[in-house]
Length: 194
Image (cartoon, rainbow, N blue to C red):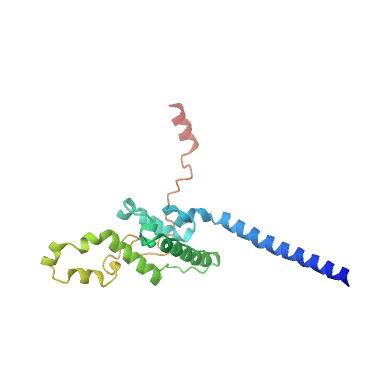
């Protein structure tokens, strides 16, 4: 009886070890395969780790915002460190789940939490346009309230991602891949000779 208990305990330990090892292995594989460390950075190219963001990346690359803002400047809260990384983690986990299970819609839309963040960041960067006292005299006395009671993109629909968005709107979006050497061999050889 005691011998049988020892055998079943050993089998249980083996099964637990296999289960823990499997979960750990899948976790490590997912971490490496998803390039998870890149999500801690501010690099906009991280957003195109998932190919469905190519059209958003391409439209941003051709916008004036490219010169002054990266994706995180608009799409992540900047009120404190904890809020920023909590939002990044929760939003990223939702994106990863959607893309892994192939549940992404044809036209990607921003959720309400994201809309609030984007609006706060619009106001954070462009507040000088909202508090310009000379405009109060020209427009009316409630200039500031009238400019902040609605979403910025109610008027500025094309900024920075354009009017038409979706997987089918820019199916062949050329996304700059700075990591790949695009020069043909004959040109490289000619350049080395000179």
